[in-house]
Length: 375
Image (cartoon, rainbow, N blue to C red):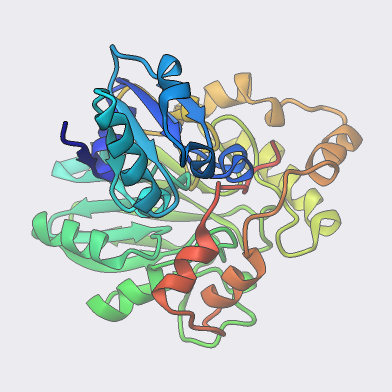
């Protein structure tokens, strides 16, 4: 019985289309508990590869016969072998091409909505890492916000849309993933923007992203307005696009709020974080649609695959926006935080331009879940 090769895109469509999938994950238990492929209707069984070397007979009763079965490992080799063993037992199974390494790098573009005069806004969902990037398109021009390092995805998408990338922004100096913003700008001739308060140690040129900056995209007045919103970093900056969408970077998420400790200054930045969330954002219109730079859990995805929610709804439902006692808030964002992102100090150095690891080293730096929130 032949085994089936699945791509990360195949799995992503199962997530977004809310379809069932049974995953046999043959990585070690600690790797599985730390990070796995999440789906609304996915089931998992974690049996380390080495426990199956003598055969899969003992787990056949745990493998469903009425669902697609996908075997997953770190890089694909072990999953191919186990999928073949299942096939030899008459159980059809697939394997994930490239393993969790490929899942970590895959981006799924999803349209958020139409903008004024024919413009469009797209969200690039990195399901395996929880990263969210954005492209604003208007009359032949495009702006990219919080791009991850896979520059060809954005450049190819813009080419398919027949638009020129003219502006590239990072809402802050990222610590959980390597930014592709500067490199996209270099390849396309676009202007690269970074908050200067986050960029004191960078070794490359950039345009300052500052409060009140207003940049039109195209000729249809789809403006990107910068809103200084510190707390996750001292330079964190939000965007209001077309008067309808609020891009919050890593300050505000759908189900949580940003953590202030990734530069070692949690006690200093907690006041800024509270002021942004409880004062600056409170002055904004409730009807703005919040589009964060990350998501934490699969339940944050909407039925269409986007990660988005009205600001007014978040003020009502997001626990991090409803803590009236300042000391309780301080404790929430400084005590008992989740583990910091994998290699986050090195990632910050890459994003400053101070070190230049090769592609394999960058992949290893980014392996693992997103950990930018306080939850």
